[in-house]
Length: 310
Image (cartoon, rainbow, N blue to C red):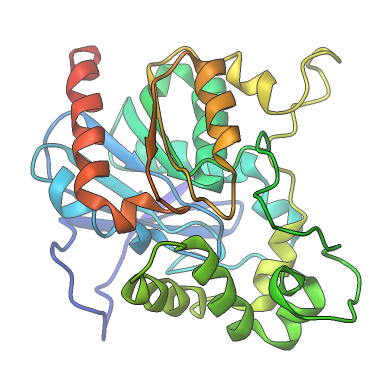
């Protein structure tokens, strides 16, 4: 693994707080960009989510948490200042977990409290299960770990077949992505933010999604995700196999109007982890953006409860 410093980014939207240190790690020829804010203890690692977004999706957590802790983020491969590999295997959850460990090494953090949104919760789950010595605690927000019932009213369409409609969730389709990536991004971000008056959040996330492209996300879509290795026992498959291996304190936060991952999955995740579940009334898939004060205080209270372990 190689690490290098990163030059300043030009023409960037103003931030409430700028990083104290930036750099790249490189693994197998793929460069991943990271940022560090603050210098308190413990270290908080805010994980990437689906490659449709980069690390700015944490923009409302970073300034607050960095007042007390050392906060580290990185752009998931496929977006932001990180590389966009051309192979599906390069987007496996094992690669995101290995990137996370390499970033912790680069900033000199032996252990961290980790947090993930949506697919980032899966990366957090895998990281906590495989590297318990590196994880003090884990926060799962809007978790997408393949344990949810289908959200009410959401039909199922095949992803990899041409469709005769592009209405609604039919847009979650390879051929539509390649034909109208901006149209999919506008639809999908509108579903993430189901709450009224979410114009700013939708505009932000659509803009970040347009910093990548349909070819990249199509490549990433079929990558392995929370698939236990073949050497694990046959009766230990799927997400539960990882949940059973997590030993750190955990917190689950989920909106009850999540159109992406039904709150039922969060309940199963919390039960499996023996963790508290905070349900955000009327909340969509990304309460960290619509209810940042609530989420920030929940995260800080959780960190304070376990900081003695650092």
